Structures are given as C-alpha cells and as structure tokens.
Length: 177
Image 1 (cartoon, rainbow, N blue to C red):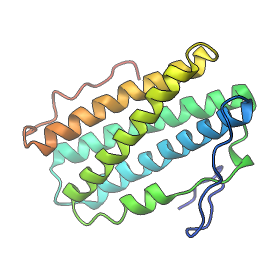
Image 2: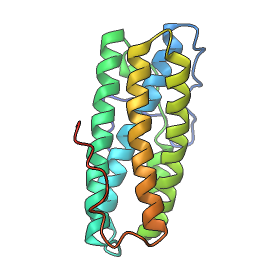
Image 3: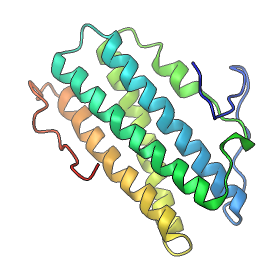
C-alpha cells in the first residue's frame, strides 16, 4: 500500500509517541495521527466494500459512502496541517489499523473491528474538541465535525449489528459534504 505522503514505520516498530499538547509539535502529532487514521479507514472501507461478497449490496454501498466521508476527514485534517505548517512527513506513523482490519475474513468480522476503531477514534476526537476549544477553535471544530460523523458511522454499525438494517436508506447522507 502506498501511504505517501505519510512515512510509515516498519511493521514491528511503533510510531513515536505524541509530544505534549503545550506546543505546536504536540498538536501536529495529533493531527498527523488522526489524518493517517482517516487515510487507513478510507482505504479499509473501500477494500471491504470490494472484498466481502458476504456483505449485502446495501452494506457495501454504506461502506463506500463512509469511506468517502473518511476521505473528506483526511482532507480537512491535511488542510489544517498545511495552515499550521505541520509537515505530514516529519514523523512516522503506524499502519497497524490497516493491517488489523485487513485480517478480517468476513463482513461481520470487519464490521466489528471497524466499529471498535470508529469508537476509539470518536472518543479521541471528542477529547480534542473539548481540549482545543478555547485555544484553537478552528482545529477543535474540525475534530468536532469528525466526531459527529463518526457518531453516525457508529449508529449505522449498531443498526447493522442488531439486524435492523434490511436497507441502509435511513443512514444520514450528511448533505454538508
């Protein structure tokens, strides 16, 4: 997988820990990590929509739509990084999320893994929204928008897991995008 412009650590390595939030480096580290998580999620949803023949047409269409939303999130984060002078390639990131998600053997397994990843991401984005609200409202708003979108993704995952989604027609289209 070509992850450029991101620099990815070797599979056996961990990405360097994020620096403190007191300075621009720490914010940059979090933006970079979040952006790369969105990049991996975008790739994983597209991959899953193509790979899992055991998924319904509706589910695969939902995955493609969510993948497109993850791409929007990536673009928002990359644009903010550019505004702040944060270089994507300055620190390596880990593709463990992608490698984990692509071990799924069934649509249900992928959906469960992705739901867990979306929940972790949403929690982090909510935390950043709150912690950055007063000192960087622009970045806080970006994280907030992503957290809100992830909440919609989780709601869809829950409906599908409960077997209540014979069709995903009621999935919010999020017309802002």
